[in-house]
Amino acid sequence: MSSNVKAARDWARERLDALGWTAGAPETADAVLLTVSELVTNAHVHARSNAQLVMTWDTRCLHVAVHDSSSDLPAPRSPDTERVGGRGMLLVDALADSWEARPCPYGKTVIACFRPFTEDQDGTGGHDPLSPA
Image 1: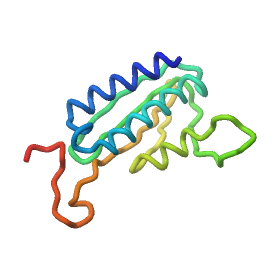
Image 2: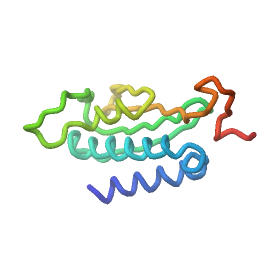
Image 3: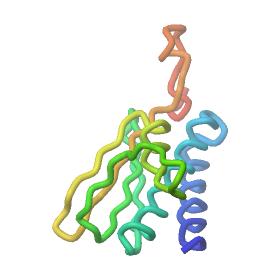
Image 4: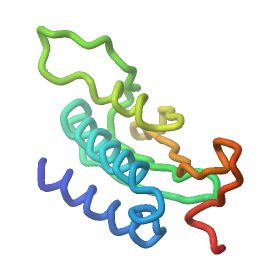
């Protein structure tokens, strides 16, 4: 399983490099990579399934989608000091700008949305680091 998670993270990093996120929005790129790790791990551990990872950029949001074969939708759980694990969706909730889980005919897809930080978001007139200047 850990090799599948690493392969997904490495693949995602290559896509983030190609988009310029690792240089232009490194904190967001790190959040994306941690989310990929969590969602792919959840597919293996909770769904006992392979994971299909798809990333799409629509110029406003990077959508990170992970599909697995379980129809059980995830939900953040309260941390429990008696339980190991179980905090993955809390992390995704904290890292992503938004996320949702959608049932599909053969399982579910969890989609997390990330917008790179720019100065424009705080009102100082920045630009999208992933768009041509």
